[in-house]
Length: 250
Image (cartoon, rainbow, N blue to C red; front, side, top):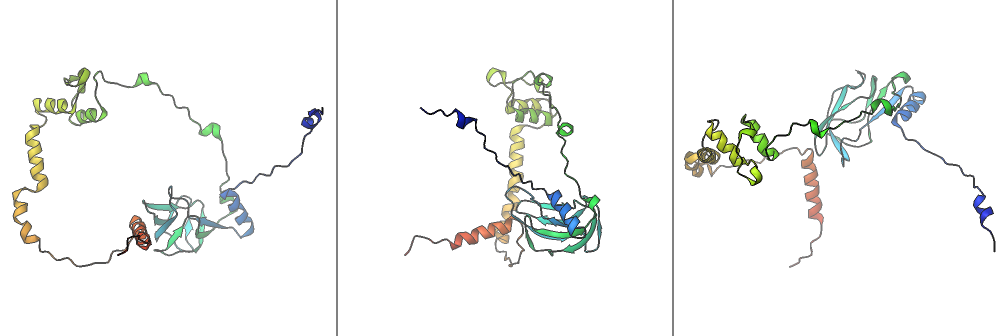
């Protein structure tokens, strides 16, 4: 039989190439080769966001910009966000105007900065790491059984929940117990009266129904509304749904 030991003892030399992607390194390369011009792209503004609408600029070409200064305002499908500058320098060129749709990663503007202004990528985990000590014995836990919403209700009325007699299982304090205790102490009115008054207020009373017939004949005029943010996404989804073929034919 042949022995596999000489084969296992052989070592095969190989080279491992690693590639690192860093915006700081790219910025340094731009500074070294392009007269100090750095591209400022649209960063990721949220999970699943692919594009944003440019609402307005806070700077113009030729303006001096400080680090962390707001340069523009964009609106995504979820929120309106201010984009700040990572560098200190002068605005060289603006690529978009308000109302344009900018995709994530596209260049918003170009800035002229010095090499010393480009931040170096440093990572010191020993300084940024903080120990989180959690001791459950230090929490102030009440002596009565109750749920967080009921405790919050008692706190809203300024009631010590330990003084409320619980009628639930194992003496658990319920919402009705807190309301009953508040009525007894004169903190609030009777729950039945308050609920009826609140329902009348919600419905608008009897007077609201007397004018309903006279206002039912109102005529509204059409108006054009600019679609922004999630409204634009909703319209795109509806248009895409209308393009889908149906299988019910007459």
